[in-house]
Image 1 (cartoon, helix red, strand yellow):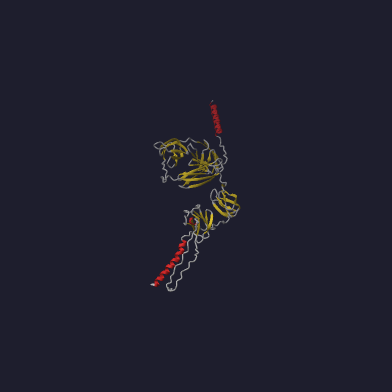
Image 2 (cartoon, rainbow, N blue to C red):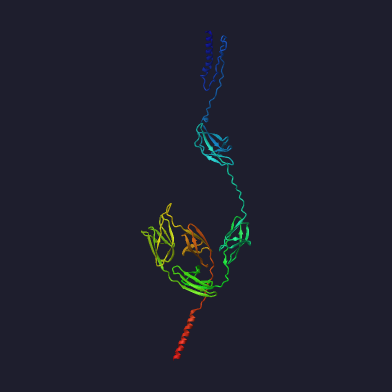
Length: 493
């Protein structure tokens, strides 16, 4: 019993020792007293030994100061994640550091000026720029993910061009081409890999006078050589036919080949030749002429006025009708239009109406006949009714500005592209003052524009060949008849 009582007294003494400092610290402010270590009671101590009460000593208290700076609690962080270490991070153009280990974390004031643009860049890489989803709140981390890629190096060294070339195209085609006297092939052809300089060119073709020229070649350029060959003088003798017409300027064709306009002197080989004379508004004239070598003859022709025809055109109501590029009228409420007094021959018709595709075609108007024309217009739209396919001709001439007519309809002057021709054969004629008219028949293919290059021949100066005048012969005959009659009367008297 005595032993238990001693232990109880010892515990109470220790509690008083601990409570005394705590009571003293309760009255102080701004500091926190250090807590005492744990109390260890050694039960192995001999409780019979005299117990000395601990002496109270002045206690020195160690204090921890609580931070009072409010900025720390108002900061957030922007975490910039990048795929390339060493890349520099900029906030609105101001460098903030480099990415290490795939991230750069930058502390920012959550209540500060918002950051508009974040840029990540490194030499040899593309630059990345972007913005924040939002400014971080206090103690918040806002992530930004930036990816930059290596720059692709494009070789900029281009070998210099040191050679040029020559393109040769003869008229007519197929001429043999020589360069500095060496045969190269037949025109048209290209001669590549020529060093810059001057070259002597020559073109030859059987039956034609050779052509020569000097061509300059420059590095990286293609020079052109366009020889126009002239027919060589023919050894055969010819006869001449001097053709005149009333009215003048009628077209003259011999054996299907156009030669020019009246008045015209024809130099033809001996034999029979078919000569055709035509003029718009007049009936065609055709005859056969026998030509003798070394002899000349006249062929005067008076053309008769052509007969006229008419046409009736059917289309949508209110459509505008064009003939030979001029407006001639409008279809009535039933979609019909009629026109009379039309010169017989080919005429170009076009019909237009709002909301419809244009209709275009060449129609032959027969004399003294009403020609029916059906112009079916197709509505415009994403999938309109298929229209009649057409082709075209790209026409060039030397010299330029030659008048062009297709199927006897004027189309303009060269260079000229005609794109509204129906597939098939078309007669093309080119004419220019001082040059022989050129006429050819060419085929037009649907959806294609065929080239047609023509070199006009300088027209010879017309030379009128006088034929034996019939008037003196007639006068001599009349005088002879009068003398015979007078002699006969005298004998009777």
